[in-house]
Image (cartoon, rainbow, N blue to C red; front, side, top):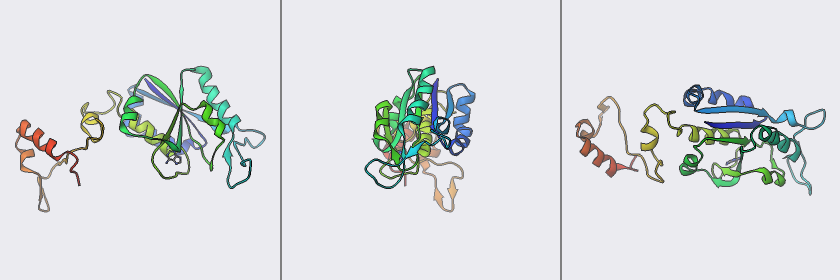
Length: 216
Ligand code: ADE
C-alpha cells in the first residue's frame, strides 16, 4: 500500500481530483490511500497563524517552522517511517524514473507550502525536495497532485490494461511513445497507416519501434 498524507491549507483544491478516475479506483482497490492534515490546525495564536515576515526584511510572508514541524510530527508519531516530500521550485526535477522509485509499500507526507516561501529550517525535516519544472506555482497543491498521480498510476493493478503504463512514453527512461490511432480508419482523408490494420504483429512491432518518438 502506498499512502500519501497531504499537509495543506487548501484541501478543497486537491481532494476532488483524488476522488476521480484512476486515483479513486486505486483507493477503492486498496492499492493507495490519501489522507489530509489541515496545517491551520497547527497555527499559532488566536488567528492560527502559519506564516510571518522574513528576518532582514523583504516582501511576502514565509511559512513558519512551528506549525510545519508540529503537523509533520503529528503524522510521524503514528508512523515514524513516513518520508517527507516538499514541492519546491528549487528541488530535483521530477521524472518518470523517480515516480517508479516511489512505487512501494511506503507512507509519504507531502507538505504544501503557500505564500512566498518557507523558513529554511523546515528543510531539516524534509527527505525529498521535488520540483515540477523551472517555473513558479502559487503553492504545493498542484505539484502534490502531479507527484501522487504519476506514482499511483504505476502501482500494479491500478491501470486497466496492465501493459499501458509500461508501453507509454518515458516509462523505460526517455523512450518516447509511438503514434497511435483508433476508429475511424479514414478521418477527413487522414488515413491510419496500413500496417496497423494488417494484423501482422511482427510488422506492427517493427513499425512501432521505427516510429517511437515520432508523435506529432
Ligand atoms: N512550488 C512552486 N513552484 C513549484 C514548482 N515548479 N515545482 C514544485 N513546487 C513548486
